[in-house]
Amino acid sequence: MKHLEDNLQLACVQWFTMQYPKLSRGLHHSPNGGRRNAREAARFKAAGVRPGFPDLALYLKVARWTGLAVELKIKPNTVKKGSDQEWWLEWLESQGWKTAVCYDLTDFMQVVEEYFI
Image (cartoon, rainbow, N blue to C red; front, side, top):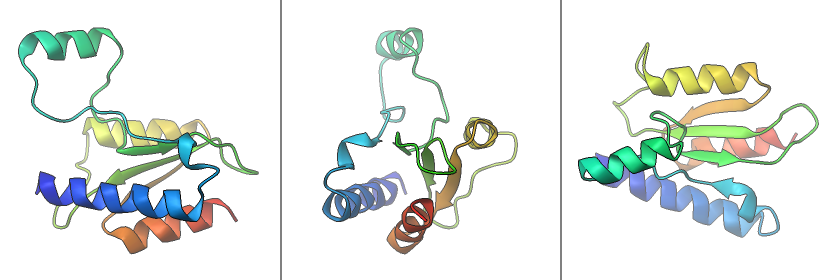
């Protein structure tokens, strides 16, 4: 399942870069996932890596939003109630960010286009 999410993320970043080349440097992925040994994981945590941070964040303020945070999922996966992912999405939204969970490239394209309206 993780491989499918990785492929979705690659497609989303590629589409965004092609659609908005001048803004593409503002789209960021924080490498929270992946397997790490305990020592490396502890270093990441100490350096500020936080579990559940959205897969993609667009650091670009537009008229009504501070930024855009997107969690990518492959169905039937969802953001679980009470999870770190849910906390981040709710917290970022409370700080003026537009947040979304996207299940495919079409979802992502629609969310980005709505962000710029």
